[in-house]
Amino acid sequence: MKIHEYQGRDLLASYGVPVPAASVIESIEDAATTYKRVTSEAGTDLAVIKAQVHAGGRGKAGFVKLVRSPEEATEAAKFMLSNKMVSVQTGPDGLEVTKLLVAAGVDIAHEYYLAITTDRATRKNVLIASAEGGVEIEKVAEENPDAIIKTPIHPLIGLQPHQAREVAFRLGFKGKQVGQAVKAMMALSQLFVEKDCSLAEINPLIVTPSTGDAPDGQVLAIDAKFTFDDNATFRHKDIAGLFDPAEENPAELRAQRFGLSYIALDGNIGCLVNGAGLAMATMDTIKHYGGEPANFLDVGGSATEEAVTEAFRIILSDHAVKGIMVNIFGGIMDCAVIAQGIVNAAKEVGFKVPLVVRLEGNNVEAGRAILKEASASLSTLQAAEDLADAGEKVVKAVG
Image (cartoon, rainbow, N blue to C red):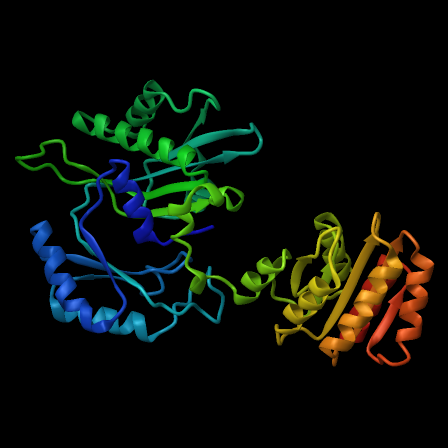
């Protein structure tokens, strides 16, 4: 589960990580008054307006703007709330923007990257840090991998202060900055564990220029990105309450209600499969024969006829779908029962695109007989002998 930047900033603040003053708006009319309030609290005339969407590349897309007056704030809000944001992470269709963060601007002496995630190679959480913050960490890893510091975190005792201090020194923090940076790292580590995060990221973590009141500058978090383990949100009602369904694919939300695992893709051949590994093999087969899968959809090992029917409806709700491949392995499940469920679901939903079904496993001959009989009344239905036959047939049918 992902959350918005403004929600991440609030989380950081609740764990003692300092963030600049900010507020969220949903209308153009609120931009000017919010700008005045936020800048007045911070004692500055500089503010930043940032689109709140679950995608990166906002700055390059023009959806992060610095403003120095109520008029500029209104103009920025009008642009962002009236246009879809299109970036490398949104695809050509873009995302609608409904919320904006209005935050006090700060002078920046240096930017850093700070994050905690799970390293599956070592099976430990890892603190990732870099003195090259403010840009995509993937770009830093590609162009200058030595600039990335990785510190493994002990699964029982967690991140230790001496580890955080070592990272702070390696990043180049000096004087009182070191203590502030250590505090931010320890807080991020605590938050990551307590809230069952899969990613906790601050990019950038900044140091402000030296002033009379703060000769070493001040360490602040000015952007935050969090994702959470979906399997753990049941024990975090506060986190679950941050979920924004408007940022999710409606078909994927619909699938969740029926216990289906569905992910939309960019192809035109829908897939309905029982088992995640079999689903991956199905998509590989479609690709092998020159087709493009339109989705990943795992109905599970004990899918009901109702769930299969809903799965067909979800697949067909994607207007790019020109054909469907069903690949079912009957282990405990009876292939005859599965075949009848598929036929009944197909009749109820109504098919205008080719439907290729491959069955294998328990009582498969009876299942194939049901499909063969049904193909007389369902002109779009084709039965396949094996996985390769199914992939070849559906790609050919789609053309």
